[in-house]
Amino acid sequence: MESELLPQVRIALRNCGEIDPENINDYSDRGGFNGLARALKMAPEGVIEEIARSGLRERGWDGSPVGEKWRLSFNAPGGEKVVICNAVEGDPESRTARTLLECDPYSVLEGMVIGAFATGARLGWIYINAEYGLAISRLRTALKQAEEQRFLGNHLLDSNISFRIEVKEAPGKLACSDETFLLNAIEGKQTMPFVCASHPPVSGLEGKPTLIHQAETWAHVSAVMERGAEWYAGFGTERSRGTRVLSLSGKVMHPGLVEVPMGTPLREIVYDFGGGTPDGKALKAVQIGGPTGGYLPASSLDLPVDFEHLSAAGTLMGSGSILVIDGDACIVDQAKRSLSFIQSESCGKCVFCREGTMQMAEILTDITEGRGKAHDIDLLLELGEGLMLGAQCDLGRTAANPALTAIRHFREELEAHIKDKKCQTRVCKTLEPSA
Image (tube, rainbow, N blue to C red; front, side):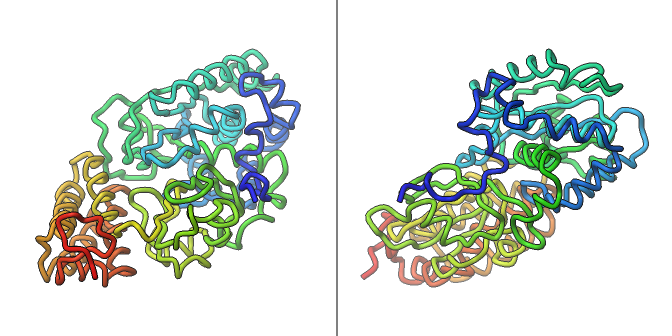
């Protein structure tokens, strides 16, 4: 069965392929801006409560409750407040923000306006990959049309609310998932994370209370306000409500984006939506959450995909990408590639991340090239623990996941590389093939 015929639950992607992304009237005809109109009839506190009751969580690394962040920003002192859409994707396999802004920029803009009204912000930023030419073009068209129809600008929808949005184009970096890294980038400072005395919702951009969400999160906000908290909370699990857009790639028949309720088993995502592996080859592992995500073996296919179960399994939701790996791949080589990429993405400020990722990448390289030593696995575990405890940003704190989960679930494969100097899959060319 073709994957697009399966019953996805599209909330963030509800209008993708259904509207002309350069015609705001198409969006309005499908219920667009009804959520904003409803919000403007409520008190800001009521909007925040609606978002909180929906159970919506940030569609990013930490999965923090959106309602709690909004309350912090609303109660923060200061007349000037800011909302930000993080549309930068440093994960090469993730396409969620790009797809949303190419196919339905209006849902993201509407969510941002709702967030601005609820928290009292008057300025918004959209931080996006500079190479996303089509997305940027359609985003700017959507901004212009929204201003013309009074969904943005002064006295939006004949209210006393004013709100404008600026676009910041930048190179895609994996570390942009960290909010402090993002704030420095928008302010034009050196793009490195920093330790905050308080959270960005209290003191963020230029010291102003700042609300930061992923593009997918803002698209969910507009849907919640249009359909209601109870409707949204009817999808997903008790602690992970709603849906998640996942990006399938690797050795899978139908790669691409799929949106499913939180808690959907991994097996259903890979086989029912993705069509399984090509040529019926056995699935060996999946890497969930992007380059800093962990590897889960085929025995984990019944694992529900939500924040709690993934965290317990040693990986993370992250960017929402799922890399499918078949039996032809070497997990040690895969982990080496992930750590090398993470090391190249490190800003270099934090010693734990700068030195830790480099040393882990070098150890894994040695193992794949026949120079592995008996104590290398213990050293990887020690370095990984140091990164999790000492790194300043999300990138550094999760950087060890590929190596740690490779050890946790595929230790025998690492030991064969080290002790026997053999690679079962013959990917590591300098080693002898396994018998």
